[in-house]
Image (cartoon, rainbow, N blue to C red; front, side):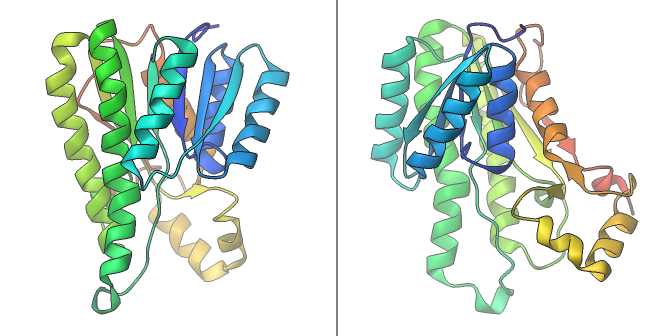
Length: 251
């Protein structure tokens, strides 16, 4: 297996894209650490990954709004496995609040989860990877960092910021063999977005806007992450890989 024995950390992996990435890591032989605020669900996913094999998984409870909890979770993972090979920041929140109605509380919440948390997770991993002289950090951003419809101001701002964080970490970590990249999905069909399929007007607009003519699947985002995470993939750092069905190149 191409990730056999590698220690892979995934935030927000109790459901959705994060869960799919964690399952794909496990299917390729990795030891997967699932970080999520939903401790019971994280443990259930971890048990399923371990049962299926050939890799294994364990859940680690963490409220990503707390730097102290992030530090504790990463320390526990490092203590358990003795190294960190791949860290994927998936956990995030979206918003569709009109500009005139955005509150300070909403602004702070999305910045805490979408931007501050990925940085401090990456920082903890970075410190371990500096000692190892190797490691890969992959941040999940969004095509909304590049385009907007006027309804995702905070989300777009945090995802653009996450790409900037990625570039800085890539430059700082290069001398230590640390590769840092971003994967930016477009509209992905997840358990949380499936209800949109019932809205024919919305679905028609989406499929006409996306050159591939369909929403993306979670496995397609996971495949992009797997590509960057693979030990055989090297020399790529500070880059952003768009998995958006062609959305951002469509006029």
